[in-house]
Length: 325
Image (cartoon, rainbow, N blue to C red; front, side, top):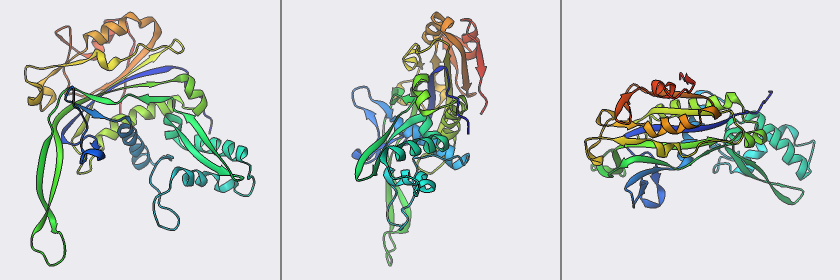
């Protein structure tokens, strides 16, 4: 497999919503949705988004990934990273025992086979020759913690289960959960072309990353996660080495005549993109193109006037490309 690292820096803005669901529970707080107590906004970790992408790549596209649950050979417990690393060394187990050689072989095998490591990197502990080492790969793709564009409210729901708590009892068990009636979440991310040289992340991997964000979110259809819909991916592709504008998520805002806690649907608000368009317009000479995918449910405004995202970008002299998933 030939891996030609991507050459352009990418800056990403991703918007999706969650309806009567828990987008990312906090295990340290009864698995309640994560909330910034100062701003009362909903938080979602980058780990949650990366898991969404990984699950889509592995479960739906059937591509190999490194970080996934695999039972131990004896059936007791789940592999840790050290044991997972050994899976890739199996064909070479009789050919080398030196730590340096094992690290190099492991690095080559993992980067060849595991798209998630090319995207996100990893720190993998390794032991050989009674020595300890680590395979350290800094991921080109980094996301900041996602945050809702409005205040949210947590609701407590209690219901009955299908079964009794134990044999011989007639009373059904109770289940309880915490959900958000509505949350429009914004993620900001960067893909660093310099780090991509080390992990060999390619343009094809970049396309897969965006597909995983969009389609992975659409396919969160378990009982605890169903109710999340992607609405916008913006991928700004830069031509100038090591340059990006920065903080694109802070250049969009939610405008509504309703109070934040009354919002239940995209029809209840508009997305103000005027500052985003103006910012990108000032650096259009550094931009190769802006790729985007947008749902049919969002309404955009620029400085109070309804517009489409594509027309808004073109009005600033920016080349656009629509992504199809």
